[in-house]
Image 1 (spheres, helix red, strand yellow):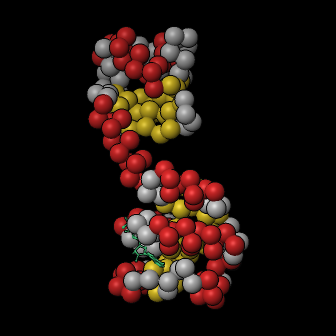
Image 2 (spheres, helix red, strand yellow; image 1 turned 30 degrees about the vertical axis):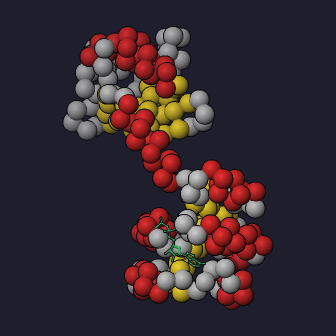
Length: 219
Ligand code: ADP
């Protein structure tokens, strides 16, 4: 479904969000105070305007309240980031996602009404740290504080084992939900008797510790 987004602050982050939304076929109103960056995206975005987004009247004139989702990509200028988020809230834009530089900034943004606060640099750093600390982890998605979906290379000891050897083992309390073989073919609904081969990539839902335990036991 085509959606309408406003992206304010077209730095590296905002520009990348705006471009991805456009590529995915959505309407994007792109805003920045810097004429050069507005020029850069003007041929792709539905509308691209150069205004100071802390100017309430200018935002109102653009019919900001009609947008269902706003993304505030201003990070360095704290005052502007906070003021713009506040104005968007007052103008009753649907959902507001704002980028924060650090935890204090994030706290303020949440307090004044940002629906989602993201920390691109901190999150990316954490992600890279986790990926580099583990030999087997290829990628992961945090489902909650406790549970992840992890993409891991099957350890040698799991070669010729069946999915049920992992899924029904209380010790691990995790579930293999998909398997990609060496040829890149993906089985999205492995059953209990599906055989695991060395070098398969397993998608597992569970706690990180449990998945580490499997690696320890089957190394
Ligand atoms: P990044 O780290 O993603 O590059 P920055 O914080 O450096 O993010 O970039 C923010 C962008 O937001 C810049 O292009 C800047 O011109 C724009 N910006 C900052 N303040 C305002 C404002 N008051 N109104 C509109 N755009 C702004």
